[in-house]
Amino acid sequence: MSALAYAVTDSATMFRRNLRRLRRYPSLTLMLAGMPIVFLLLFVYVFGGQLGKGLDASVTAGRSGRAGYLDYVTPGILLMTVAAAVQGTAIVVAMDMTGGIIDRFRTMAIARSAVLTGHVLAALVQALAGVCIVLGVALALGFRAEAGVLDWLAALGIIALFAFALIWLATALGLAAKSVETASNTPMFLTFLPFLGSGFVVVASMPAGLEQFARYQPFTPATETVRGLLNGAPVGGNAMATVAWSVGIAAGSYLWARRLYTRRRPA
Amino acid sequence: MSAVQEPAIAATGVRKSYGDAVVLDGVDLAVAGGTIFALLGPNGAGKTTIVRILSTLVPADAGVVRVAGHDVRDEPDAVRASIGVTGQFSAVDDLLTGAENLQLMADLNHLGRDRGRARVAELLDRFGLVEAARRPASTYSGGMRRRLDLAMTLVGSPRVIFLDEPTTGLDPASRRAMWDGIRTLAAAGVTILLTTQYLDEADELADRVAVLDRGRIVAEGTPEELKRRVPGGHVRLQFADRPALHAAASLLDGAAPDEERLVLRVPGRGDVASLRRLLAQLNDARIAVTELSIHSPDLDDVFFAVTGHPTVAEEAA
Image (cartoon, rainbow over all chains, first blue to last red; front, side, top):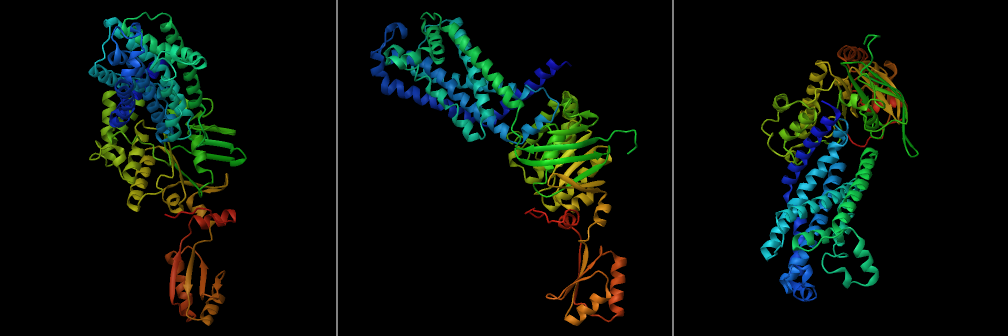
């Protein structure tokens, strides 16, 4: 077999290992999906009646009030789910790197990239499982999308791409962390970003400086793209911006993670 | 052993520092294929660092290291394909079962479906893990975990195996079982380098022993050669009064009397022939001994003999 074939086989082996680990440790996935569900309930039932009044019908697919706000906030909550899930990725990666088994992998003739690729692919499955759970809750609460099958697929594709980028970032953060505790804290800022963007309110309602930040940070185009696809609104340049952000974050994080993995602390 | 055959493990002038701390200060090693080599030393002597360098985990600052005919710096993957490592800290996946851990190793060694399954079944059986095969490794006892760890190392049939303190923390029965396992491997032609803090372990297993102290090899040889250099073995004689002690001290060459405790230390290995001779001498001189005990040399004695300072190891077996 060629080196590439080995890299694919070894990555698949590591992917299976990590999926199995996630299945043995379901409380982590449930806990990570629980946080966005709490925010969904909080924002729809506590703030939703009030916030829904201020929304323009063009961003809510026609419904108004609390129902309109549910339609508005669900895409933001879905991206928050991704941010929460990758926190788990950083924890899982750090747990693996501080355990003894990683040294075993390093003394075996396996493809260098396999360990990290296995983590990333399993984390992607975990994040998308979390997104499906949260989406299920939103649908149960009455979320209605004006989307055809292709729009749904495109929205899920955008979420997956964005998740892929954040997972590489979280993998690098997990590798950079000296302990599992640190790894559980460093990606936390990601879960705040949907608030400082268009996740919960329209950015135009923010004060000038914050609005600038909110308009250009990566969660905003991602949220707007998913929202546009699901609510039948035009997506505009947001899709391109999301793809560009995702590719940039994924590439930069991949290079950082690879360097951290290769040049490991001499413990 | 022959001059033409390259040693399975060959290291020359290996140095390693972490910051200002010199961990290895010019280590040379040569381990012939199919033999067991023990690296003996207290905590902090640099044993684990040597194992990490030999097994491609960390690069040496200086020196040349060849394992299984390949340079660890230039051809790490060729070295990795030939070695197996069982570290001091458990290298099993706690969330997977024993069988899944072994299957993971089979997959990573590209054994293929049928050969992999056969190898997993064989190793579960050989290491007494058949009943525990479907339980997560997190539920295993210390001894079972160590056995699983070693079994995982063996899945790929490595030609050279590194064992870093393989029996530290094990109960006596598990320790014996581990020793038997190591001997079986060596009998099959595998080269083994193990580190240990216990002289009896090195004595029991190794063809050759090197004593490591503060990053240097201070003595090397067969266990017999090493023990011959150790004066720590002695027969301890307890007397009822001072005159008896003095009479015995003047009778026996090289004996060190302890006036306070009325004890005489007679150097010697305590074998039957020399004991019989000693007792005959005391009997002929009509000297009464209240108590006799045999003290065999341990790591502390080896250390004192070859380095002139005691070990700093805090833990005992």
